[in-house]
Image 1: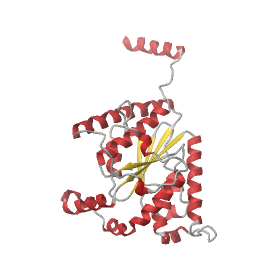
Image 2 (image 1 turned 120 degrees about the horizontal axis):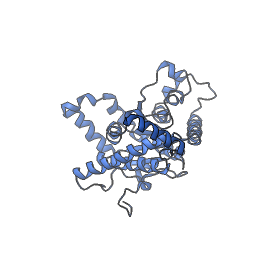
Image 3 (image 1 turned 30 degrees about the vertical axis):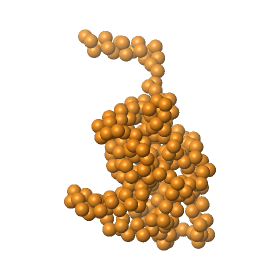
Image 4 (image 1 turned 60 degrees about the horizontal axis):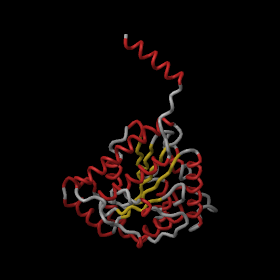
Length: 293
């Protein structure tokens, strides 16, 4: 917490150029709330601030915000999005869930399917998984590349990932120059906590629908994913489009950290409602006089 009692989100931000070693980043940190009631109150306050700032951003019509969520399975992405964005006007916010690419999407470059979903000015776009899957799951399972019909000179092991990192950095830099702020969250979950959450999905009937046998099989590649994430964070966290490594073993704590990052980002834009000119003010008074009759 900082001197004003707010979460120090800089502790979770990956500096540009930093080599990330995920073992050195905590999956659990000291709770920023003392009770469930305080958690609810803190989250409610953040959501209210977000709602106010998003409305001003919409009226200002110069910026948009893209939030990207990536994580290992069961880290709490869906819950974080649901709880943190619960009070945002639906007309000003849209969530996109990116699953396995379709045949049409595979016939385009790896950024294409997400590019058409970018937020308009004034709106918040949320990507639940994203183009980063192309340097994560595809890197852990490089056999998936054969479905992308890439030229032989492009599909060179190792070189392809550096090329994709460069493409991502270039695109996010372009978005920043165009007024879209990009903020990326990696929900950092421990392997033990993931195991507990998978068991809960099996043991608790109301959670059975969440269970996927494929998720458990992917645990066999845990170390490979951690390595892929570490290089991804190192290569693509920039001053303009940063990654935040959010300790995710405590879901409530993670949500409060995420909400503070969003509030701080929106607040940094210094957006406000457009000023009303004297002519417009006079017209408003004329309309008021007509309605008052």
